[in-house]
Amino acid sequence: MSISSRFAVGIHILALIEINKGGVSTSEYLAASVNTNPAVIRKIMGMLKNAGLVNVRPGIAGAELAKNLSEITLLDVYKAVNVVQEKELFSIHENPNPQCPVGRNIQNAIGPLFEIAQTALEKALGHVTIEDVVKDIIEKEKLNH
Amino acid sequence: MSISSRFAVGIHILALIEINKGGVSTSEYLAASVNTNPAVIRKIMGMLKNAGLVNVRPGIAGAELAKNLSEITLLDVYKAVNVVQEKELFSIHENPNPQCPVGRNIQNAIGPLFEIAQTALEKALGHVTIEDVVKDIIEKEKLNH
DNA sequence: GCAAGATGTAATTAATATGGTTACAGGTAA
DNA sequence: TTACCTGTAACCATATTAATTACATCTTGC
Figure 1: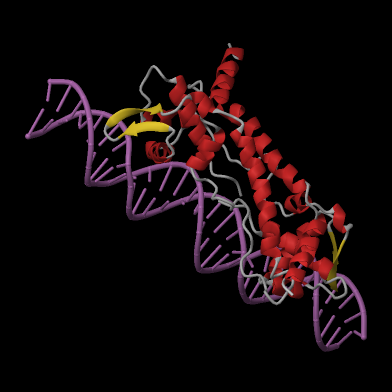
Figure 2 (figure 1 turned 180 degrees about the vertical axis):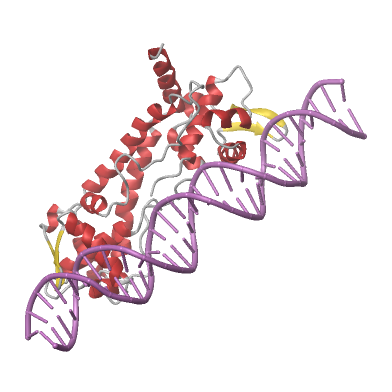
């Protein structure tokens, strides 16, 4: 199992919109960089739009960031693209046997523990911004010249 | 997406083996508590065995813990049952466009960030032992009497 | 030795999720 | 009106999960 690449693609899109600030970031343009289909980009873009991270309008070419670069964290993107539901990173088997002491308590015993772990993950994502990613990309570019 | 319930079932199995210490924990017995098929239990048990967490032998009924309760963390179980590969909790889109500055650097830019988040998750799991889970289950049992 | 009963493991299946693709409705601007 | 874009639904191939069935193999008791 692994978390959908929608998350990585979402980050890619936001970073590219920023770096392409002079030009027009159409879904076709973004799709060419990600190497996927424009419809996939438009779907993800719709999610980013709903989360208030980008501005896009029907009929009008190009997308823009709706917030300051430094105000968009990876956690924002992660939540926007809906790769993991609230409290449901880990799945717990349903219908354990209520006749058994372990069966009737296991869900309540491990649920909170799983939440703690998921929260630790999300907190880590909250500490990184798209600005950090963009700066890192620019840095890596310089090193290869 | 969500992490396979093999993880939750693995925890369930270990806790039940402990609580059923007096009796014989066959795959059929464990399956009845988890509410699944004995073959599913045997498969997971094989993984726990490979990780050195339980002792089971062909032909001999019952499983035992191979370590002290307090020495088995949730992280041990998580790794044993192989629900997430090393460094691969988050998937990153393959073949981004190398002609684009973002495309050619995105993987190296976000890979390490994803690792940090995954490590935070795993660290949280490493702080909890099966003993904690068993104690919690016993506690919850008392409260309901 | 052999029957009974357990574990080990492979093959199959249904259900679900993902990402790609196509198609088209609807909006915008020249 | 034309050209081009976004929004979105429908469909498909593929992968994964958990359940199920089946059977080989091992151990013990007799």
